Image (cartoon, rainbow, N blue to C red; front, side, top):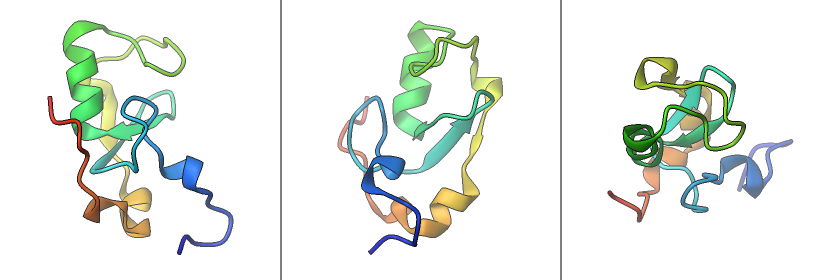
Length: 79
């Protein structure tokens, strides 16, 4: 059960298309699984959603999404 106003798409990682595990938000405002975004950033210096310049120094834990409870789901895409 998700809080009012949050849809399943809001907690889906655009990279692995699973429920976000260990959510991290980028400086451009997109959220991904930590493993997914750090793996992506090893190959490219851009956001997978909008192509904004991005490095590991520009990603931060998404504490609000963690409170929703998505951190209990494990991303199946461990790189």
